[in-house]
Amino acid sequence: MLRGGPWNRLALTIRWLKQEYVTDFAPDSKPPVHMPIAYGLVKVKKVGSDTGRSKKGDKSEKEAVDDDLVNLSQCGNKYPRCSVCNKRIQAEDHTLKCVHPKCQMVSHTLCLANKFLSDKGTMNEVLPVDGTCPKCKGAVLWGDLVRLKTGCYQNLEE
Image (cartoon, rainbow, N blue to C red; front, top):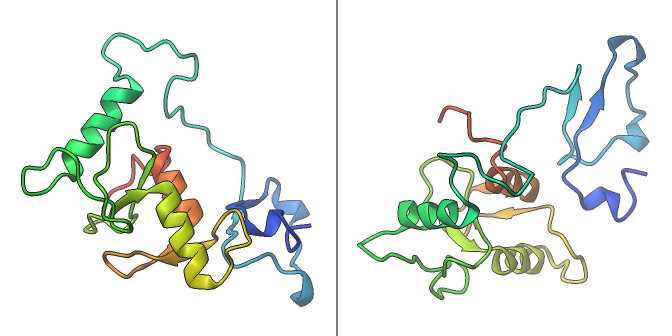
């Protein structure tokens, strides 16, 4: 199932919950390389409020987007430019940032997805699997970009 569409393009993690059930994958049925294999129970950390109500002191989604744009801005521009299409990024735009700590790449989600798909010659697909950052030229997995956007990597040290 993991080697066939559409599952083979998703940023899934294969997790063995109990050590006594772990078995090796046969060479011809190994999962795709972008799907990590993890072991042990899932540790859940609450990333944000899913109730729609923010607690006192919590930032709204709009404020968080504005903060991201201010942090990404360079040369005094409030709204940086997309690293793919070079258009100004507005507060309401859906964006992704590079996972490499020193890279300042920010782009529209659709621009970057289309670039990754185009570079790989897979324009008939919906989701990219991986690509090369247009700014730092580092290899990135699409799932890592989305995880960074959703706050999954917020407690990691650089």
